[in-house]
Each structure stands twice: as C-alpha cells, then as structure tokens.
Image 1: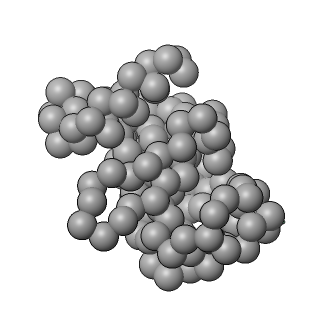
Image 2: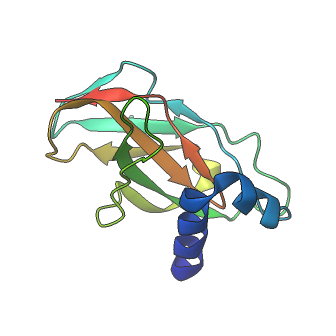
Length: 129
Ligand SMILES: *[C@@H]1O[C@H](CO)[C@@H](O)[C@H](O)[C@H]1NC(C)=O
C-alpha cells in the first residue's frame, strides 16, 4: 500500500493534472483547511493540520494518506517536497486532522504542506521559524 502511495505521489508531483485524469476512479481530493496563508509555526511546536473530509468518495472511507513538508518559491513550480521525512503517515483521511511536531528546518516564509491520499492537496504558504 505504501509503495502504491509513493508511485501515486511521484505521479502527482510529476503531472498532477494527468495523474488525476489517469486515476479517475480513485482520486480523493481533500482540500487542506489549515495551515492557512501566513500562519507561523515555531520549530518544535505541535501544530494541527486539517482538511475537508466531505469530498471523500463513498467506498474510500478507509483510505489513508501522508503529509509532506515542502516550500514553493515565487515563480517556481518546484515544491521541494521532503519525501525523506514525512510529517505524518498512515493517517485515516476520514479523521480530517492530524497533529505534527514542527521539524527543525531553516526559517522560510514559503513553506507548504501537501496531503497525499490518491491525489496531492497543497496548503497555502506559511512560515516556520
Ligand atoms: C491535537 O492536540 C490538541 C491539544 O493537545 C488536541 O486537543 C487535539 O485533539 C489533537 N488533535 C489530533 C487530531 O490529534
């Protein structure tokens, strides 16, 4: 299951639009509702990531996902996703929330988190310092 998610994740990163089209029957899009644009996460603090569960299709109630930290510079489409250090894994998508400890990363104001179920869902940019 994990390896399938990795393949889907890589497909999604490479070409989210065409991946979504290819996987039409199983796409689960759960828009992230927190963090919000401009939020500030202190390193080492515990933060709650939330997403909309109302979009989970019937039949996919048991789906799990994982969350990656990345950053997105203005004018670039490279999300710099940190696949080596997922913020959270094996999250039941139906939960709609997970608490994560903010890793000790360099201060930036263009961090994003991406929730992968069968499709990537990206947050607005926020700050870690
Ligand atoms: C996150 O932590 C807060 C504070 O301890 C707690 O109230 C909340 O239930 C936790 N949420 C999740 C999804 O674990």
